[in-house]
Amino acid sequence: MRQYLDLCQRILDEGVWVDNKRTGKRCLTVIDADLTYDVAANHFPLITTRKSFYKAAIAELIGYIRGYDNAADFRALGTRTWDANANENSAWLNNPHRKGEDDMGRVYGVQGRSWQKPDGGHVDQLAKIVENLSNGIDDRGEILSFYNPGEFHMGCLRPCMHTHNFSLLGDTLYLTSFQRSCDVPLGLNFNQIQVFTFLAIMAQITGKKPGKAFHKIVNAHIYEDQLEMMRDVQLKRDPYPAPELKINPDIKSLKDLETWVTMDDFEVVGYQHHDPIQYPFSV
Image (cartoon, rainbow, N blue to C red; front, top):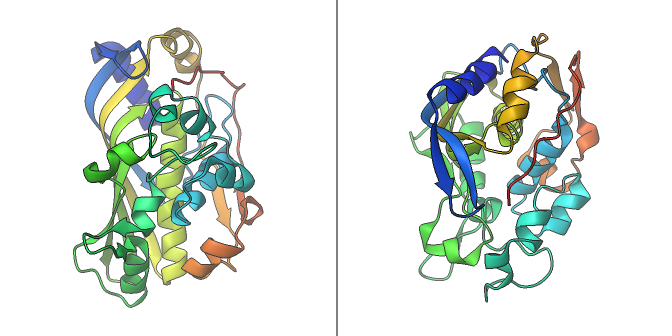
């Protein structure tokens, strides 16, 4: 929690104003931020200086794991995070690759589970990683990438969290996640929940011990219409201790994640928080 608040304060102190063409807003921006989550100790990085909702973030992660390309599928899991980008992004609405209402195109999990090959076949990056780690193999390339420049035009949004690199030392699993762009007041809480949960659940289904998750952000920013609430409200609050995340121990395979897992299989224990803050979302 403290590292999150330190990053917010750093943006206020050191940030440079940048005009964002996609949203039409200015962002106070810094380059290069590193956060670390202790998954082994189960210090779940759920923001405590405002009430946060973890299930939508985990639902989105499960949708990526399943390779979903439709906002309706994400809604069925328990998150509406893709509604706006699928249905309100003017550039995507006019894109000939859009298949219709709720279609997201070839973004995020689609690339992770079905990267297109020149010969017409597909690569399932995640299945390869799970198989290797389950067999105690780390070929130094246990990398899940959503970043496919050749298909940016076929999706509603370029991936922000674009790469997850798993590393195995003995029987302990680590994760390094790379993010090109981060809306810190609104998006970072989702992102850090997902990084933590991804390592925890991958360790569980591959039979490994979770270690630490390293979260690297290139462009960290606060939008101009979020700045006052961050400066005058959230940063004036004292954080509470980190809660714990409990995952259903019956989740034992990638197939389980693909089929029957729901948000009822995840529970946060010991969550103390301040009142919610309604930060605006920029499409």
